[in-house]
Length: 161
Ligand SMILES: C[S@@+](CC[C@H](N)C(=O)[O-])C[C@H]1O[C@@H](n2cnc3c(N)ncnc32)[C@H](O)[C@@H]1O
Image (cartoon, rainbow, N blue to C red; front, side):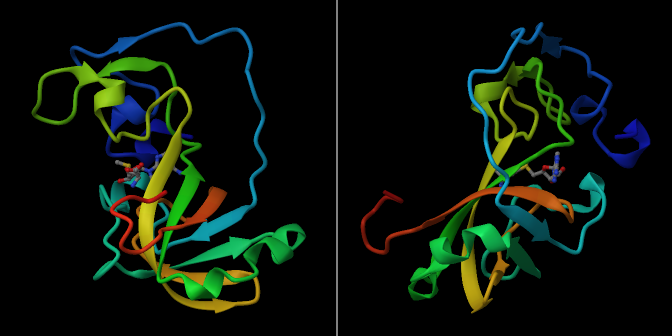
């Protein structure tokens, strides 16, 4: 990923004043499967919104890999979904970050994609499902971002669980 592809050097190779990086662990504790891809209108991070808008954001599609076809059974009954996705272009070693115009703050106090495990989460409205393709509103990632998981948001529970 070239630094010039982003508006935010902290997410690529550079660091801002006040930011702090650490050495990452020597190995991983787990492995994950990407289950599909997210299609959005944005090819660069700089073009993405900071957070998706499930009401007036642009229509995006989620393409689930054929292997997981059966795992989609019944999903059409949900108006809202939680989408988890992998922010593969983000650096993973920052513990203090300096959001534009703000003092440094800890990574776990932010929703920045730069984090040890760059998993993003958005609550989207499900508009349509056609076989392996879900049409939604509410995403904020670059086109082609890897899909990690899809979960229903239960209405009236006061939580997502
Ligand atoms: C602030 S994050 C929020 C993500 C998610 N809604 C959350 O709260 O976990 C969204 C930003 O991540 C950046 N981004 C989008 N796609 C990315 C990707 N594939 N890898 C790294 N950064 C990405 C863009 O700058 C975008 O504005």
